Amino acid sequence: MLKYPCIIYEFTGIEKRPADNIGYMLYGVYDLTYITRDPDDETKILIAELPMCSMNRTYESDNLYHYSYKIYN
Image 1: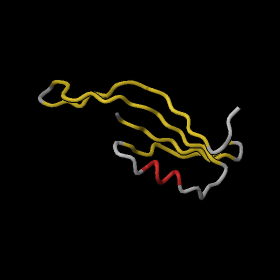
Image 2: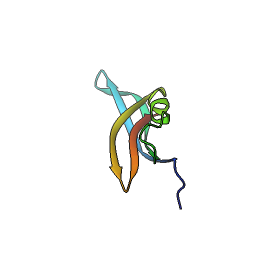
Image 3: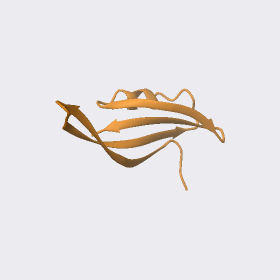
């Protein structure tokens, strides 16, 4: 059973950054979802400030606010 707020993450694959038609850099990619009951929770902004992080989408379900991010490692 989850207690809120919580973070759920999973490894989703490896991305390749090409240069001169070859794979130049490889990044591990993670999907991270922050779930909270409070829509004004500032943690969503702190997560977005992480290096190599981009917010993917937001949605509401069952009176919970979900903030989805891509994290590149």
